[in-house]
Length: 166
Image (tube, rainbow, N blue to C red; front, side, top):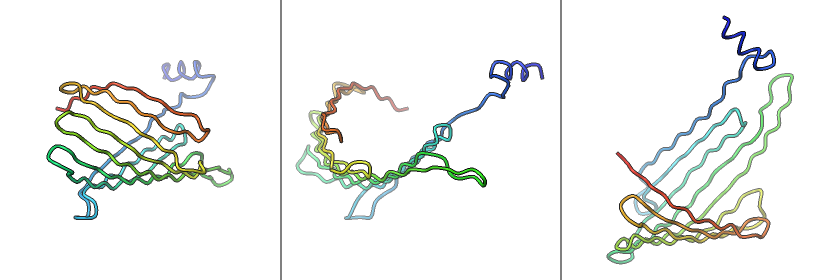
């Protein structure tokens, strides 16, 4: 009981608020010749009053012995705000987004090149993006991208990554 009183005292007389978020993703096979992979993702963050649900469909096909092409279409809904509670009004905004991506992968060199575009209800035009990724050695990669923003400026990014699965 004294611990609870101490927490109330440090929080201005109110109990401390808990917070958290949840995230889930699932993949499944596609529909034969039309697409070969389906992915669904959902995120909920009640503290930030934000949630997102999305799905993507992709199709990979070989171009030659060590080169492949992957086409992907993605769709998502983002929701920001609070829902109405009886007696208290709420305000919710939703943003719908679609993206299209083409990725060429050169297996022998560990290189991939990506080009794509995104359209959302908050923007009035397709925003294009190009990028490349290079596998340096075992689980280490470096990547870079260049993309348009809705304000007209360019978004530039260079990242390095390490990924280990066990």
